[in-house]
Length: 94
Image (cartoon, rainbow, N blue to C red; front, side, top):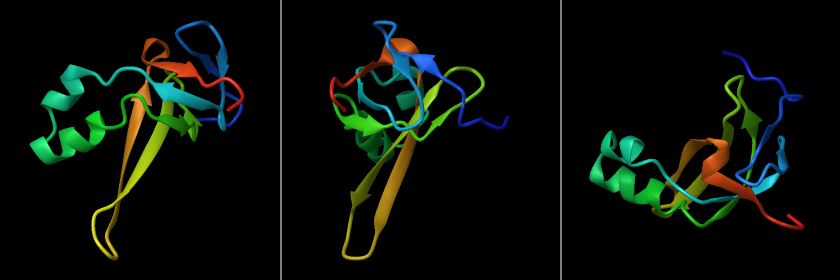
């Protein structure tokens, strides 16, 4: 499924969300966390409450965000997360 930069969705309050919008992650699905290793689940869970920039809206209306960790001198690590409208809210002024 290929995303288009013109796709939009909305947050839990109905505010429009598009690529570049800053959203706060309100919830990380327990079903998703259950599929991950303990270490990866902890990293993904740490995304909750964090404001991140949307880099993609897919055709299902999910907003994709990404967080990076520096786990060593030269070991950056990232994880992407698809958010449903109920799992995010737009950060005012973001």
